[in-house]
Image (cartoon, rainbow, N blue to C red; front, side, top):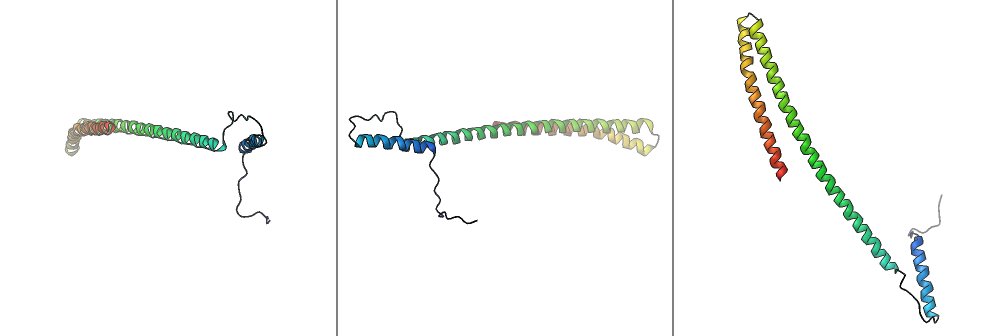
Length: 152
């Protein structure tokens, strides 16, 4: 369906703009037609109205920027909390693994009569405290890195 509208489409003025132009033209006509006094005090010029709209839009953009900054800070805080909780969870996994290996070593040492299995059980009981120490060191190293990162 083809229309006969030209390509340079111009937006229709808003009701507010039309009302302002109408009020201004009436007052100017009154003044030109010899009215002694025309009160312009209650009117806003269209240019002033546009400036006011631009100011409001700038304030809105500033408000939105502040909200984005606040959200970014909140996301950073949440990322820190997630990482801190992950560090705690990893530490608990180290403890759980050390206890399980130690318990397996005790089981091999106490309940199996084969000499090689007994040696493996003793090795498990020796490795478990080492694994626990590694877990403790890892926990505090990551915790210190997190606290240093938070201070920045």
